[in-house]
Image 1 (cartoon, rainbow, N blue to C red):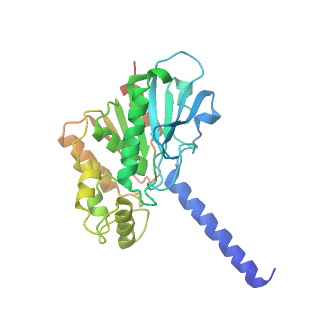
Image 2 (cartoon, one colour):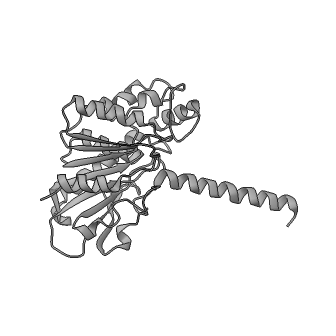
Length: 288
């Protein structure tokens, strides 16, 4: 190997490592070691279709003991609406051991002509599909919560806004108001320069020109919520999604009289999950 080729190989390895590390930050946690129900003692039904697209699938995990119906948490992964998967590690990793059913959903990415609106429609459709088939999965349809992180948190909030009948929501590290995010002078997303962040968000929304309609219809902080109780979790030092996004969402929920808790984690970064607080919240609102 020539010195030049060796240098090129080293650069490729370093860039690849940095890309993987960055994606791990977006998708995973920095304060927990997550696992998936696939690696716990749970009964699994995987790749259940709720549409024709290969991404329109979900997995259902139920406790290996007991007959149900079980309280259930539906997990929506993060990844900027364009990465991530239902089979990745998740913070509800071992909840089947505590008597919960766990559902992990996929949605269409906002790429190749699809947009955040398509991701949102899929999240709502997947949750509705689960609720409509609750008996078949031994799920208690009256005790279903939704938990999403980052872009998945946005989708969880949009599921709540759709009022499909979930009992509780956890929205963590989530974008909730696209109005500042499409502004090239104010946008904060994924640690990018403001103009690059705004261009990316506009692309994901499918509105390189006027984004008023997309902002109005896809921003949970600008929409009337359901009456399901909500726990909002956000790190004060989040440089991927600014904490002002959580503050705007909480203000809207409070104005509409929703039972909302705000866990503003001082010094916390983007992947701040507050697992104990979230577990207690779902235990309270999904208890039989």
